[in-house]
Image (cartoon, rainbow, N blue to C red; front, top):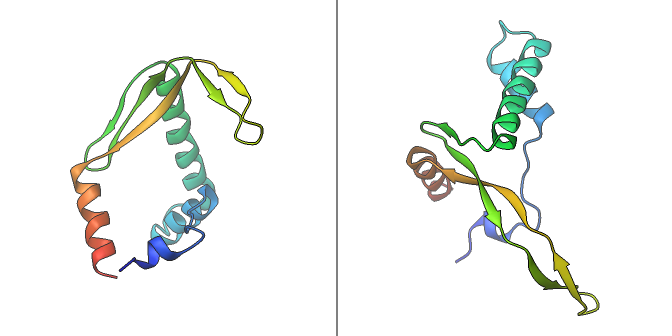
Length: 110
């Protein structure tokens, strides 16, 4: 039996502006501009850390680090033509135990 999450063609999304609005509603003592500044500051700080090759760890939530992908030869799915894919570093998120547990319990409760 597939869950509602697996059956939906489009996954629900929380955008940055929706996050700012949600936090502003939850914390009425903070202005929406202050919340937006805080969210942007956190995301900028995290981006800079990853660009500098640092690892980010937020206890109870998870950690982010960079994974290296070596160069390889791929294929264009439309034409089947071989394509050289350059090396790259990609962000990798590993959820913490608390987050995994909360997500699992949330979906089991539906």
